Length: 241
Image 1 (cartoon, rainbow, N blue to C red):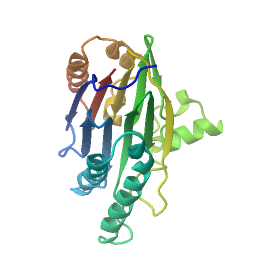
Image 2: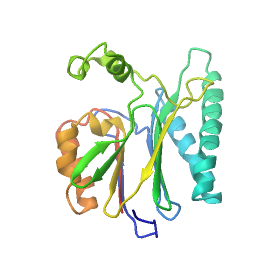
Image 3: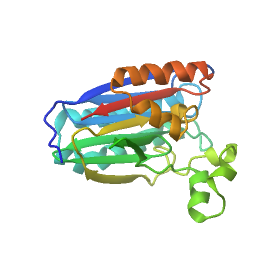
Image 4: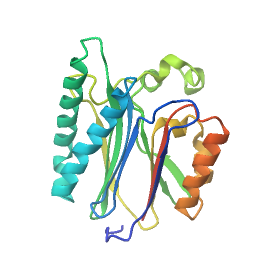
């Protein structure tokens, strides 16, 4: 296991893509505080942009005040505050107006990692030449797979399956998941919005994440996505231990 000492490499990018007019993704990368996050807003016009930046802002304000175990312990409070602020903003437009944001966040504390997420933004861990998805999408498709109703192959291209079951700001009760584990020297984390995983499947991600230089990985992600038509905003954060 590795103790986080500050010798952490980080590389990130966010891009509007080839189709959308606005970039509603938002990023946070604070290596000295040991926290990284990706948020993917939704709601149209400037609403999605507002939602993603709102949750990132709440996390940033918390990270300025605390770190380590205190950051992990108080992190859910920041999510709850963002959830209520986004929900209040959406209600200004009437009960039928729904805005919100996904979130995936990684906190490194001593010899452990802590990952929190809501929605379909993902976190992967690359260790011992193997890429593992450590989050689980909060989508109808994943729910149907978990229930055994359909196979992953059957619903892979079903648009209805992409609908989110959880997100921040869409309902009063905040729903999110978390996972923790030990970290080891050489571990590499990838946090991304679904704009990246719409273009690259697991095998393609695995091949690219294996490249030694993490800046080059993100260059390859972006160029490959744009060459493929990048139908959505896309964001990536790589954290190398």
